[in-house]
Length: 197
Image 1 (spheres, one colour):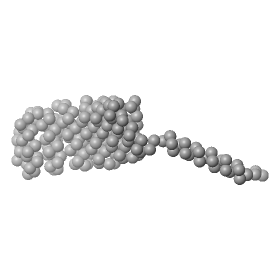
Image 2 (cartoon, one colour; image 1 turned 90 degrees about the vertical axis):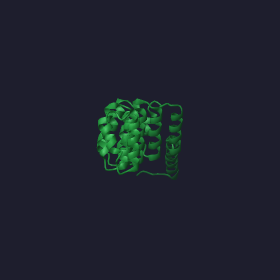
Image 3 (cartoon, one colour; image 1 turned 120 degrees about the horizontal axis):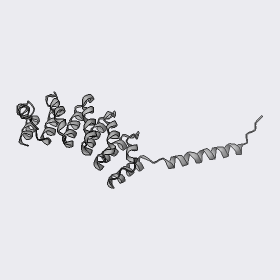
Image 4 (cartoon, rainbow, N blue to C red; image 1 turned 180 degrees about the horizontal axis):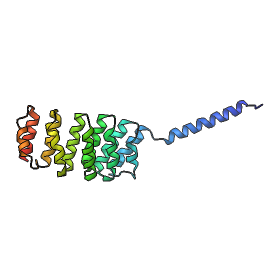
């Protein structure tokens, strides 16, 4: 028969309590994680992968601020990690990931944006993906952008036209002229703007 004294139970309880307190102190709080993102962004340093690790944070605000920081830093080593956020369940995070890829630029970002456009359902996100193609500025994106100039959503057509204007309309004069007669005022204005560039 094993005897357990009250003092043994108290010692074990104290040890377990102390361990749980130490664990809580070593895990950074939400505020700590957000502060770290801000510090790394301010120094234009991806923190030897620390920012990339925060892209998987369970807190949506931490993910959002992290992807924004990576876009502003512009480190092309972040493209694959940012690309994963293009399938995040939250629209705001997908929009910010698209924006970040447009800021980072390069061929890997271009391919990631084009791939995401094929499966994206949200017009808001599609619009930001098209804007990213314009910011990346690679003429190979023209064929993809053109497909979205006939999209039923005026928002998507407008974003496609702004992307085309960044690419100087690149040989699409007839299509742009046709869109100057679009039913939507914003689409017509952006078509004229793209033609003027």
